[in-house]
Length: 355
Ligand code: SF4
Ligand code: SF4
Image (tube, rainbow, N blue to C red; front, side, top):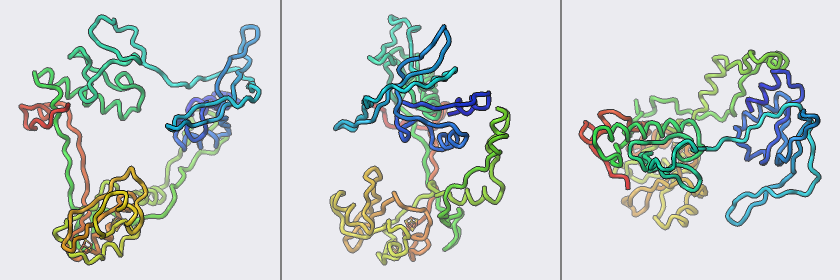
């Protein structure tokens, strides 16, 4: 998406993006696609590249095969030719964005580093150690293409492994992360975070005028919010780091939290098997990927069940609760880092061994 927009700025008069997959599955963020289309760049989907066409040693265009998506019983997608005639797109430049693959021909196969059938090094998935103990892999080179965040996380994990290896420790014994929850209560109805929920849609970032932005690659396109809009945008935050924490021993089962919750995500009901329980909640919990938060048995024999999937973190349940059984607590997770704290003999004691 960056390339097509840069091409427009570098003099490309008619720039198109032609993609194998459908619009929804394209490996680009929705806003990147919006931005490209906003600059007059059409996105043509379900076209598989077939041939570069040239005349007299000069590129004249490309032909594509038109396909449609079909899904098998396992949900795997196949791109099937539609049988339409192959369209030809005249052009004088082609920018290819087809992703990259790992290639390790430069590592001698007798070095002791084992490779799997996809040509990737055989690694321990937690330590990132290869079959040669002092060689580690990370990022796309380790387990295939992911993203920069994953690559950084691999780097931290490999650094812990290297630190432990150099100190003669078992690299498979991993240090635990630090995780804590801290109450945000400042008074009965007062929280240290702004808990009002905003129904506003995402505010669009103002842009420089298209004729100005397209005239030079040096013109900054996104102008940023003014202070008032930035504030409103920040108010849309769902405070996902603040959790509802339930203390069942303090609950007197008055049901007040269940009544006040604007999302109907709290239920007091008889316990049961999960599929049945999900249907019996005040609002059925249909997102199976989201676990239910279920308390132990309360005094009346019921359990408290919360469907976290729809919680707004508004804190109304905790404000309403007469006994403080609900609290809003900020969750902080810090992954372990290489250094003395990650070693068995350091301040941070060894945690569970990784199988
Ligand atoms: S924080 Fe708000 S939305 Fe979430 S359970 Fe409590 S009242 Fe319901
Ligand atoms: S408001 Fe508090 S005491 Fe009442 S049911 Fe909810 S958690 Fe229990």
